[in-house]
Length: 546
Image 1 (cartoon, rainbow, N blue to C red):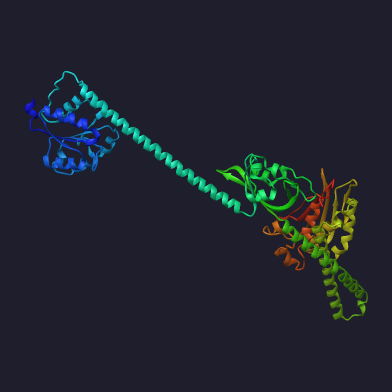
Image 2: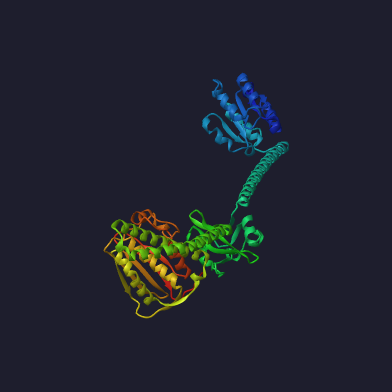
């Protein structure tokens, strides 16, 4: 047996620091069997020795310095002799076999160190070499005490390396988490800096209406600290009042609407926020829902203190009021003088008659303008004349108003129709002048913006809690793009300007303001194929908000 092994060369390529004891045992075992044993401590040295010595078999470790076993095996197979060289891979890493699969099943044989005993490895080498099937000297595969110590030492070293690798992996994860935490902290600091620099108040709530964020400007405006606010329901901090000082319920709030129906609300309101000390300030606000994956998870309220803007508006209204009052006397006198001249117009020649007619028309327009400006200023300044109440029997009042307007309607070649569906007397306390102005504005508009020889119809009906009055005509459809702005002050649509060039754009604004002042509602319907109709309601129990 020993003769057959003589001159057979075995190259053992193992890292010295890795398995020095194992390599020594293998060297001794193979030498006793009569093999010539060559050794190499890394892949580069092993490749050079293999190509120069042409050993009959190579025992190759995978993890080595300079050049690992897999790389060395690939380079070996590139050589003409190396293609046929017998190789046994020694490794403890099961995954190494996956890396070697591409090289073909006949290129090598893999032995796991932990699964093979020294004597078994020696026997495997005998079997691998042609004609070298010498049976082991022992009748059964057992390890000597020395071999057991060596094997145990190797296993402990392997476990130590695995523990070190696991420790390194945990350290890498900890470092990654630390970096991510620092990045999140930096992003949070940036967000807080942005919120702090916003000149508007900002309050965010979760889907339950609980405050989750308050910026510095909101703290300054309201007087509540962030610590006092966060975690509370929004209406515990945002106390609201109308202009009369009456509280406004949370259900009527824009935050409630945003959380329940994903509605975005942007308004310059007549609402006030109350500070912690009980004082109040007017606000303009924008409330938007926070939506994540098509679900409402909260809402954000951006609000401004518009005290300064309100003061400017009041100053403008006071100026308009003073100017209108100063104009009223000379304009009224001019109107009277024009009317006086018309009584003697039979003595005028045709040219003078035309001048007088134009003068009368211009004077009436000027009187109407001054009246609109006076009504506007009264509303803006909450004049006592707009809040004074009178007991009015509504159906009778509207019937009398219709008779008053007949002369004007006939002059414009129109007729007036009143449909009164109310059969009982209804007396309501309301400002008489305000109601007259509402009816006059809507009826005169219906006359002015409809074709000649058509009727303007007023319908009067009673609902459960209000009286509804609607005024309709045969006028053209109001363009959709103009409809949202019809009740804005000083606004006149292009379609209206084409029909009637003169106008202040205050009529519908005054109508809306006066109706809302008594707690009523106003609206219109204008669609192709139907009459254009403006309507408003008067609550049966008027609560004058002014």
